Image (cartoon, rainbow, N blue to C red; front, side, top):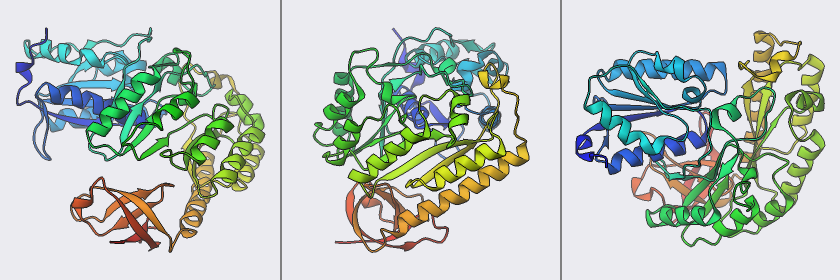
Length: 439
């Protein structure tokens, strides 16, 4: 039995790097600590506990993780420092050696956090406790919102796709998931807490059901029946796992929004083969076409990696032309980063950092063109927007059903409320449309 009295009136700060799944899991850690009596530290207040949830998708991500740990150790002297996430899972020994780190928390050990912290409270700070293990089999549920309006529901974890450039299967383990019944129950709990929008997250959510004999489509249909949730969004889903029946269902769903995020990674078939992806450009294009046929105004985000080993100039030009011809809304562009232990290191052709940067900038400019054209088509329309609490001195913002960011005059009484907004022109930096709330 854990003595939670040692946590009463303690304070904590949280720092998350990486994907929506990490934000979901950080929120779950915060909930565990909050229920034990730990409150979130106020701005400028020294914290007793620091939690860093790390990413390791690129070498730069590793560097940012180390910098974040050093910064929090300096800002909160004497605090118990907990590091979790993919970087901690992949390189626990390196993380444990960082001055100030007390616990390197394994991928599925979040439920034991209080025990580790309780033990530390009774003794002097010393050598870091490391709980990371390579044998990751369990599934830890998570449905939390943290400081956000939207909830993030972890429906799946791990990945059975060993793409040549990626270490995530080593960090997250094999694909696994909870039951549909457990997901529905967590969605109902979000309703009880006032939640109106849920984002489905995971490492490879299209693989949902492998461990329970169910399917992602079954999950979508079940969640659509949960009264009180007004909006669901499907986060990153592999194109070969996004079925036409799911697309059709979303097009007439009560609560699933016309919003997709689909990783492409390269618009060149030769590079996709080098990456060991499980689809080609023809399949990807067919999925975009299908979505747009049944949901012409759907927002489609696309992940692209530039400068991977083997991506010659000709291959990149093929990819650029393919992406330019796609009816998508936004590109999330990543420069290839070499990861130890990956098969990509066996590919001879190496792209220079300068060339990676140039290719990245070209795709980012293309992304801006596509996003702004998508936004511009909706100027003058009236659309329902779920508002989110704004920071002091900034406009309030929210998102339409098809994920257009909208800014309105600040009114925190509208937080987590769906209101009709007339969409006006772009804001100054063209990252949102200015809106007028209709009474």
